Image (cartoon, rainbow over the protein chains, first blue to last red):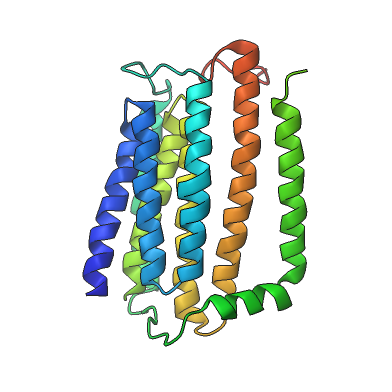
Length: 161
Length: 101
């Protein structure tokens, strides 16, 4: 059952990602990104990572999509049928294909037979919080400082002077 | 659930992101492709956490850190894109070549 749900969600998510990078309409690309990110959140839930799944929904589907749509609207890019690909497009497809064709068999052979354990009885949010605030408290604070720096930096860059 | 399925999905999404970064001209679409790549990495972290750790949740902690850093990167990136648009009225990466020699 979980495998079936995974396959359906993975197919939807991959298709939406492909449509994102081959689309002519920029706003549609942002909406395909919503589909991809929601699919990833569902897969996080399937892998019993519910806190990360909800963080994904809040931050990506909530904040990042709105930010990207603002970016698309404010830059007044041509919404319509224009040349959206660069001149180096002919090399981008083979690079991505070769990367996929080389990486997948290696990973497949190396990790064949491994399974992800899904038999967690209780939620893991409490364990995750304990982990963050005991062992990873210093990296957590560093990330806070990084977010503050990014906030100040983006305000400084975007302000009119 | 077999680990291989998740690995194939993440590799596919990462390669789609690579294609988007290399082939697309609009800077905002390139930022979206970077987000896809980071999300594929997050899924890898969580899948390997399920395989290796069991009860320790270090992979999920790292996924949270990656999400935070991706948000910071996107904020600064969009600010730079808006600045470029304000100065040169384009977000096409073919025409932004100030740092090219």
